[in-house]
Image 1 (spheres, rainbow, N blue to C red):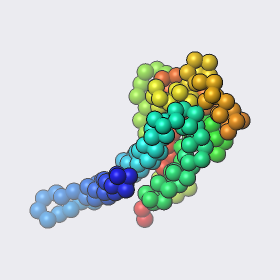
Image 2: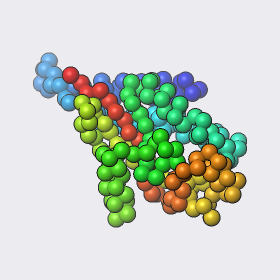
Image 3: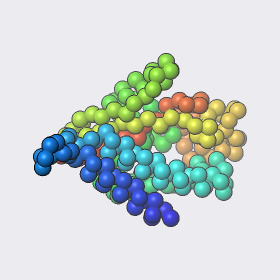
Image 4: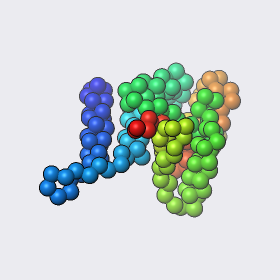
Length: 197
């Protein structure tokens, strides 16, 4: 089932690329359209979110938030690397308040996060962004908290159980990723793609 899901998403990525590569004007003429890196990056980010989120939901249903924290500690980075390889792009999840220090945002990512948080706070929608960085096309895609996220990332006194908090403290002594509310920006997916010729 998981393999079928990956194949379906991979097919969707291929079709997106094919459909955005050109359009017909008049008889027999084709005009090349610019490659849509923002959409391609979004498809890749959704693939990573689906793969990680799907496995995380299964773990949550069997063992609750405590098991989810342990699962993320061992599997989040390897799953992201696996999807990166499959998609042919570099994918990461970063935050201004990371749980894992390896997920700390750099200067350009922090600038996007600050703008996105400001927009959310004023009730405006947050849109993905595409930047040219070191000869690559890099897309930033927001990660907004849901109710389920708050079981591990919410208020330490009212939303995260003492058992879960104990595991977070043991696995992530420098954790900064609690205290979020509903529909707040928790971080971003960063998708770095090779720029075409």
